[in-house]
Image 1 (spheres, rainbow, N blue to C red):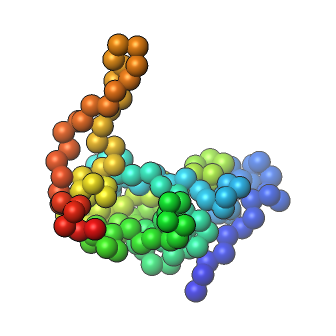
Image 2 (cartoon, rainbow, N blue to C red; image 1 turned 90 degrees about the horizontal axis):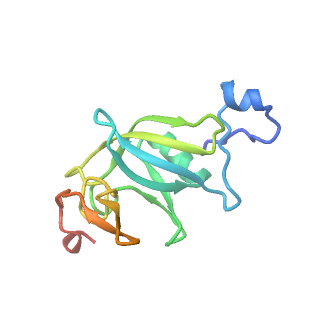
Length: 148
């Protein structure tokens, strides 16, 4: 079964922002921005995109599916690595053009393909008229060379 979603175009501003109709506003490429956070800690795990099919699969199966822009296909998060993301809650923002998915990060607890808990393992710091990246010290929970 594939879920269908309401078309946001005919909805009024009030219906879109205050109503109970889920009408995700996909961009011109058919994608919606998704931020995954860990249930309980609210740690930001990763940022990705979904198309309508990935969103439907996520809601139907209870496991997060994303659209890979680089590979041009749907991927079930953790299908290869075992680092599945079980949906705890799926939220949309006020104008329904972004999603936050609250997940239970399974496996070894690594959401990032680099083997870290979070994809956000570096901070940007100003340095002599430019900016550089500084590691924040998140350890690798698995070796990507052994998994992928």
